[in-house]
Length: 308
Image 1: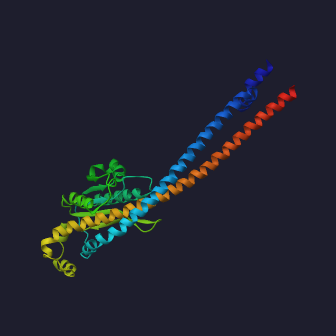
Image 2: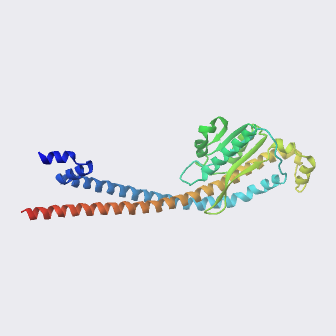
């Protein structure tokens, strides 16, 4: 009776310890469950590491293909872009169309987040000045990242463009859709590939047809007279401006694809490394729990032998 009252007045920690010593089967069952849980966790981490390593190998194979496509495609698009860059551009007020270029797949670091951030900052800046902003977005990750706060600004969206091989025909279709609204001002936000480790997220000013026609004729002729056109530049300028926009989108997507693949390789390598470190920590916990279980069983055997 006295021992029961003393046990009831004892602190909770002492009481739980006493209960544990009174019923050693609970310790053994709990250790077994812990070992089983840790074993399942180790198996899951190992499977995850296999998946990340496989994804890195797939990204490495795709990287060579995308890099070769960029090397072959940029010389086609750069001359038209360089021609319109000679015209220059002056800052004017008015409605702005933003064309962000993102990917359709994730697990590639902060590639898409950087583009979405630039879109948010540029939208807030232009709307603070009183300008209307429309967003024509490429890529499912850009749509998912911006539609909650900026979905009412969406005018066009182009998703699943990476399911088919990227071509100038696809870029021309997107350019026709964007230019159909005759935007007054336009900016394209995309990732520019530098090397396997670094990239730049930049906002490129797209010279629209209304900006080119409103330009000073002397400056316009000074920039265009360097080239010869057949037929006259005044007859083909509208088509040339559409071709320039298509080339700009085509080259930007090529660089964005290489950047995405390079960053996915880096992300999967880091994920495999983190999975290995996590496996070592869980393995250490597993070994400690197994050693504790063995020690407990040995103590029980020795105690039983001494009692006999």
